[in-house]
Image (cartoon, rainbow, N blue to C red; front, side, top):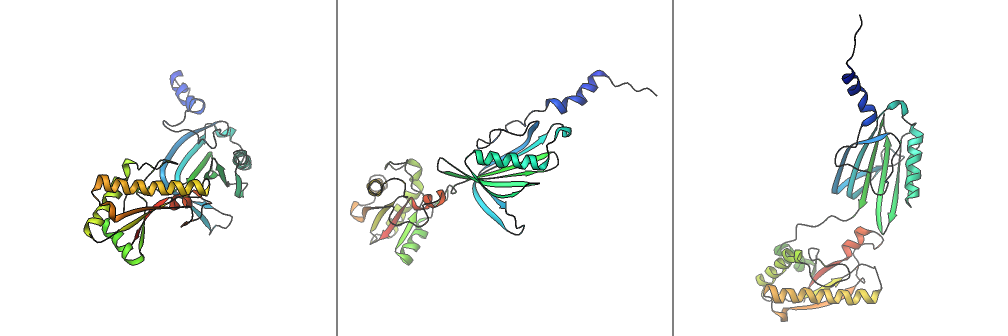
Length: 274
C-alpha cells in the first residue's frame, strides 16, 4: 500500500523540531544570560520570596536558601544534537565561574551548584541535567518583606517582658531619614500602644547596618529616630514629652553584617521603655 502524507501535514510534523520558541513570558536569568545551543525554555516560574534546598554530595544533607526564587526548564529541540551530561554540567560550571562565583558541589555527570556574589547580592545557582532537559534554579538571597506588623498588644508585651521591642515596619530610603508612607501601619500601632498606656514613655532608637562609616551611620540613625518621633507627634497625636529619639548606628547588631539578611535585621527602629 502506498500512503501519501499531504505536504502541509508533513511540514507541521517537521516544524516543532526546528522552530520551537521559548514559552511566552520566559527568558534566561540575568546571572546566566546564555544557554546551551539548541535548547528552548518550556517552563519558568519566579517567586519574590521562595525556598530551595540546594544539593550536596551527601544525599541526606541539603542547604536551604530563601529569597527571590527562579526556576527555568530548558528542553532541546532535537535530541539527536543533545550534548553529553558532562558537557552540560561543565558548561554551567564555567558559566558560574565566569559570573564571578565559586563552585560549591558538583556531580559532573548530573548536576552542579555554586554561589555568586555580585554588587553585594548573594545568589545560589543549581543546574541539573535530565533526558533532553536542563533544570536551572536560582535563589537571590534576601529577607522576606514584612507585611504583617506586630500590633500594639504584642509590642506592649515585649516592652513589659524585656524592656524593648524591635519594629521592622518603619521604612526609609537608602541613606535618608524621611519616613516613607508605607510605615503608617506600624506607626499607628505605636500610637495605639501609647494611648492604651498613658503613663508609658519611650526612647525611639535608630539602628543601621555596618555599610559606610560609623560616624555617618550614627548621624543617620539619630536623624531617623528623630524623624519617627516627629511623625508620631505631628500625625498621630502623641505628646512630644513621651518620646525621645536616639541613634546608635551599627553598634548594637542583632545579626551578622556579612549577609544581606543580617543587614536587613540590623536596620531597625527599637522602642525602649523608660
